[in-house]
Length: 446
Ligand code: GLN
Image 1 (cartoon, rainbow, N blue to C red):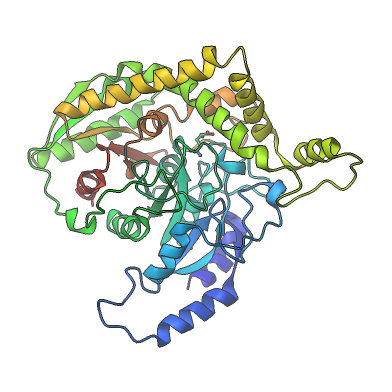
Image 2 (cartoon, rainbow, N blue to C red; image 1 turned 60 degrees about the vertical axis):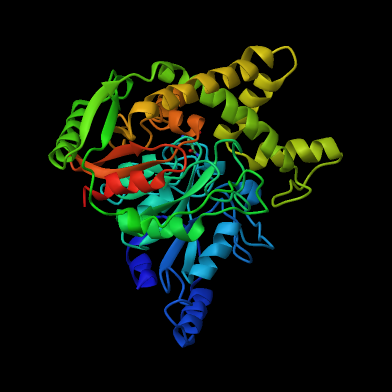
């Protein structure tokens, strides 16, 4: 059914970079013939899933949206992909994204433009644009994305689906092609909250291959979907409803708060005073980490190699000049500058200190409240080309999602209304490792 739908609509939506129909059919056949008891049956038995193309899949081309990895055929599976095999899902294919997950519209993909299924003239968001669009278009019910500064939640909001960025450390990053290692997290994108909880269940847990994965219990997320939010204390940061956030978005948040009030929750306005520094802090830290992580793409070890080089230095230069797109080059230059001697203290070190303050803002609020609620994005999906000429307006689109990554806490985006026919997202932010409460609140809307 997934392939039937993909053949019908992907011509328009352009969510997939690679499909593996033959293998998927074989896996489906094998699962069909397997004898299970209830306990041995995989958690997501037979469910079709699409995977963001920065998550490595054995023998299935993995490009991270970049020409520099155009023909990279991994020899191993990411931990999350192994876990999906255990859950008995069926991998349908790989999903388009901004190159190396840098972007907010999927327009930075080295290969093609994914469209928003709600309106083909608008972007699906990014960087997990293919992951959100494929679910919204009914091509797959489940997908994996990655979120460094909003890349699961923002496209989920733009495409009217449910996307969760787990707590940093909840899900193994082994096999995720690194953008900014201290911020990156893999997470589920689905049509509803219950599916989302099932998928997170399947991919969570400590992994000896990722030293930043956390040794904490994985609760039963689905069991937390009780519908009970009585007595829940909600904080609404005034910084998240201020300038730049459009009126329809604001109204949709107040309407959602009313629903929760009706169910017995209470809300109060709070302040996250360092929010205004989140954007510059994020771009210094993420670009610095990216400049180090992307040093490995040298034309020798992976993927693309420039053909006409006489010396090793030329080989590096030509490969990187031809293989990387403009946005990736911009980040590498920003990061290299911020890390260079003489500037390190002024930029990188300062940004680390501000990150601590941003984290502390969240800790202070969570002493008194159970969740923080606000919009996922200041506006609904924008049109192609609208923000490509000025990187800063593109960066500003992530202003409400980025602080969450800097703090390392979990957050979900769930659909909460429309503005001129385009979906809007409500963001629910929780305490470290408290995805259960986040899901419980999100579920109250279904
Ligand atoms: N849009 C942000 C960026 O370009 C976030 C990307 C992400 O979360 N991967 O960095």
